[in-house]
Length: 234
Image (cartoon, rainbow, N blue to C red; front, side, top):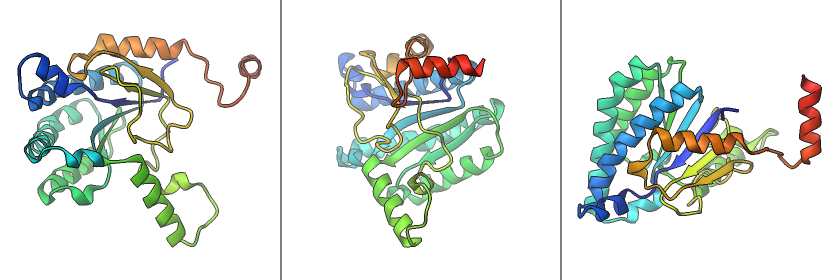
């Protein structure tokens, strides 16, 4: 059983660098290699959506020098990976409160999204300047402004059109979701690993998928009901 949508909280870059006597940003640069490896493996495995929590709204409180370097890294990564997106039929999407981003970075993001909009392979979703609480609040505000029409609040979320995650992976040993897709993860399976993000590559990703495949997703039903539904569908 391959999940349609996998989300990853990419944690442990700073600790990885510190263990090697390097500045924190060194870990973030190394982490881009894990992004590339995981995107490649997601496409190989037939996953439809891969979401990566790159930068939260809370991260703006980090030291200014680190934030500036992270934004530069994001800009350079987008430009460097555009040929890869074209070659591998990857659709690139950014979700978050982009009002906080620079005009130059927003221009790069728009260019990459427009260029890959018609790609039909893996959808790579980067959550940038995002928080789950912000997403719920902005969705509720837009819903109310439209006169509270009948229908699902999902249609007003920043992730509208993207299926809810089947599997959420968090690296580095932390066991919380840190304000990431609070609404969307209602029935998501969680997988926590002690592996730091720069060391999380295809083998570690495969292990997470194997664990997911061994679980029974019930969505509030009993195990017997799920088994009967599977038998009825044969």
